[in-house]
Length: 271
Length: 155
Image (cartoon, rainbow over all chains, first blue to last red; front, side, top):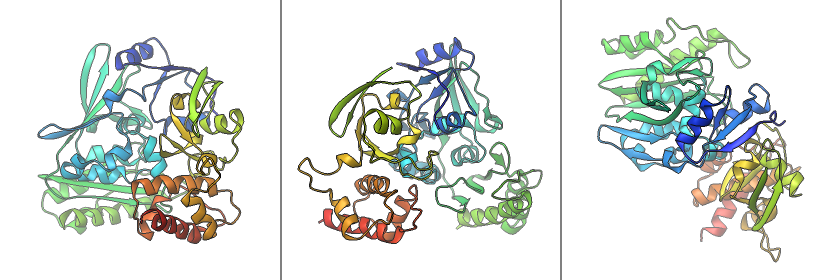
């Protein structure tokens, strides 16, 4: 399998990438390519132009900025996984990055690519949702910030417009407990269901592969934040959520998994 | 598009379509067929090569993305005199293969893994190779081989 033909441009700067995107109807950015290339090989995506931003080293960084850690969009999963700054201040993100795919995938895939791809079945979008992270988005008209809670819009659809580039992810430091529960059958698979819990004052819970975007388990969050027991909160894991059925799991099985994994994650984060 | 990269220490330059995958570049344009195409969907790891010293699935990288980079394939692991790499020796001595189709990818993934974790436990070796599938299910001797290579090189 190989993709449909396309024009390839290697951008020398973010500004150049933006100007190419602005001048095209369907140009796509590529960095590690581990979300986009599989789609292109299946011909589910066929952009006329690929803009390679993979070598813009100024977008690869992990910086302690006092109350938060700033992560360049081109930082690879491998670099997140072994980052001393993250292990110290946002350990859940280093851990989740180490759960993505397999080692070879983590050598290529980037956090910005995974988040801009916006797959509800992926690990990192749910992690940044539980972390209440902020996306920094650059375009010809300047820079704007988008909270994770309003960044993921629909199936592989985010708040990013055609001429916009996700440049940075700002992640609040985590002072309390955390956990990431990922259920799958084979080590390198996507989660059939995953649960991220972050206790930073209040408790935030997000779900992987329970919908077309990463989702908050709002009913469980409300319950636990109002003093309910972990078991009670976990029972509400899929309230108001309509999970998909597919080859791996029926919707009912996913609801069951969500409750079990929310319970385990809350227990782990409270230990 | 003209693409130039170092493959196993030699500079190679070819005119390719931008959609050429690195694995096809290596096999069809450079003529090194040790790197296999298995699943072609970045699941099985048969196409694993090193890009700048790190394991990468070459079916999920464009040749143009590898422009200017250093590629090592299974053919580049042994010394110029033909002496096998310690990992190759360990696979040979521990019978770390059955049909052999996954072996080049396994060896490339394992050498990259040992660079990152030179003294792994057995469990860490199994996790480190999670992106490489052996359809003969010969995992046991593969893991044994990697542990033997770690012991041989870590002394």
